[in-house]
Image (cartoon, rainbow, N blue to C red; front, side):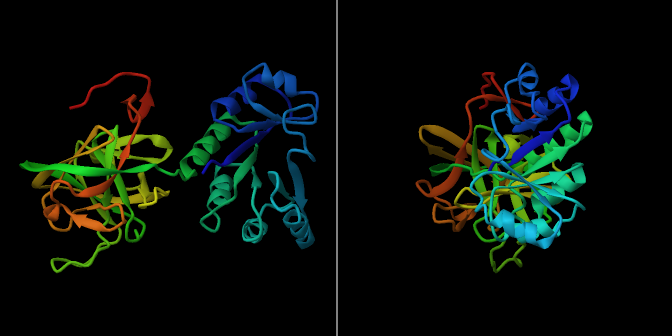
Amino acid sequence: MSKFFFVALPSADAKTVTAAIEAGATAIMVPNGNAKAVKTLGKISVIAQDGDMVPGKDIEIMKITKKEDEAKIVALHGKIPTIIENLDWTIIPLENLISKTTNLVQSVKNEKEARLALTTMERGADGVCLFSEDPNVIKAVGNIVRELETPNIPLVTAKIVSITPVEMSDRCCIDTTSLLPPGEGLLVGDSAKAMFLVHNENVQSPYCDPRPFRVNAGAVHAYILLPDNRTKYLCELSAGSTVLAVNPQGNGRIVAVGRNKIERRPMLLITAESEGKKISLVLQNAETIRLTTPTGKPISVTKLNTGDEVLAYLGSAHGRHFGTEIQETITEQ
């Protein structure tokens, strides 16, 4: 789900407007009379009386100085975005409003306030309005907004084509700092263009206790899907990295990595097909490593048969450069 990222500036200063545009701002808020100057620097929405989003019509700006002000915001019924300006910045009014209405854009002054506003009560505000002229702060908050957006991933059904033993290999067991519910896992593949939903270890087994924070994700070379449609090699993950956990409905959420255990193990090459595209991944040959069926249930790689159906993600046909999608033709086989 996309978040609003507004940047409030006292003028149409070229340096700060450019910083906001490059940081991915949704709109720039400036005093009346500055909209045209902003638009000469880039194609972006402007919040101003002479802009694209007119205060009082397309957007509301509400100050909170006392409890009664919260009721006025709730009475707007979230019909249009509402920028909340706190006299003394505190998270309590936002917590109260999140439970009662939507389209809330919390005013913030720095990265710390932005992250807090966007993660409050897990859902967070629907966006932030940054009051800062510092290009470094603008860039940092833009990065936070993108990081915390929770995408919906279009999963597809894939049919298993083959399960083939391969030589002993180094595999990555990703231990997250979150408890992963049944059905949730990580999207991993030999190619960034096609990935399996590898199920977490929140499964009772006669061989070991459940590890609800763990995904035994695959060999070191494999790609993993991250927030903001980026990828990394599994071996690049370490404590503090962020990854995208996805459930069978395709809902993503950002979780942190606490540990990446790289160990040498016997492996299997799993291949499947969906919509005429090949999906493959080298996974550890063990009962506790599982893919995810279309019903959201885990299925062990040791019990997979050709023709079985599992969930997968078919990415873009474009190439990747340091994990970022680029307009380049790359063949991976």
